[in-house]
Image 1 (cartoon, rainbow, N blue to C red):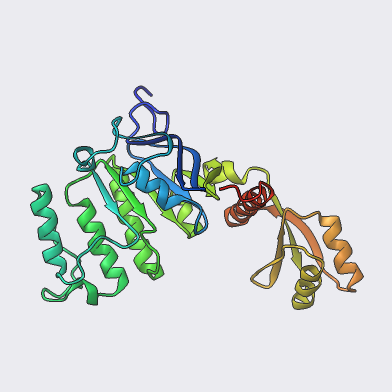
Image 2 (tube, rainbow, N blue to C red):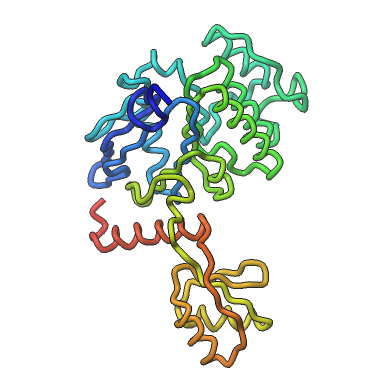
Length: 303
């Protein structure tokens, strides 16, 4: 295959190189590097306060970097290059006191486009502020896509939306990427991370892992416990300080030593099967985030 590859640096639609942003003595983003290429979906994951939105605002040129470099389409962010992207912020960027059609008319006037029809569930005179959140987000997506952008930047686009609505929005994201649009999307939903080509995980302002979901999980394992007395087993392991989680009627203990788990169960007089299984992305995510928090605490909270 010839030509620049997504994420290779060449032809990057959005790029951050060692980008750092400080607010006084607080460092919100620390030395983050990230690239989004044409036709790829890059998922930006992290807990609240990880620095995701601050990084996006730097990429858009809404705030400057304290050090490092960001670029859109190979140039410093500017009003001119921002016309080539579509952006859905957490607050959606809609005018609540206008109808969906009026919001779209505003976008058409700004970009000199002609938007497709809005979702059929919309009533012509219904103000956006009175719509269910799922419909509001569909209007925001339609607005962001109206001018056929080369890059989509989506900050928690499915937050608060029901599962069916989330599935529809991800169909839209996939269709845009299939047509060559690059996508940078933040999400809290681990199942949505599986829709991404690559993932970048942030914790306390830094990147703690990046790659495909399989690469990030790697060879990490979880101990799986199956017991008729699962409630008692849960209590015993929790009391022993093990990071146990309920999965159906089974129990999972990411990163634990099977022998240590067995010892806790034996001491509690509980019969159970104990085996190892590959960790899930969600388990690996929480492990990475916890490690990032521990490193930050050890550094004395110098951010």
